[in-house]
Amino acid sequence: MAAPTRLVTVKELSDYLRVHPSTIYRLLKRGELPAIKLGSDWRFSLEAIDRWRQRQGIELEESRPHGRR
Image 1 (cartoon, rainbow, N blue to C red):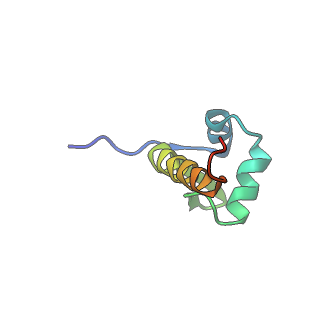
Image 2 (cartoon, one colour):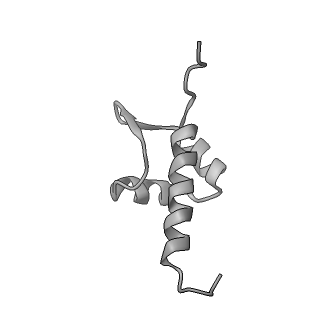
Image 3 (cartoon, rainbow, N blue to C red):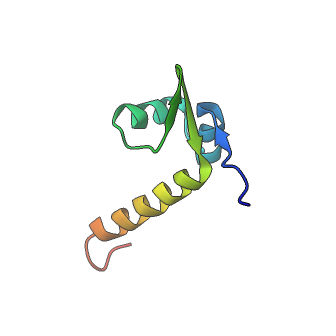
């Protein structure tokens, strides 16, 4: 049986991503982060966040001009 998904708070996610909590709230407002709202609190699956980060990296690589890194 698979282990249950661990959900983290905004503070824990901001530490994990090394960004200010206001950055997390800004991304939430834009609908850019995978998240679950429980009552008035946001929760995040680190597995979903890691997949989101990978997609963001791919999109960033594709948007760079050829030959530049």
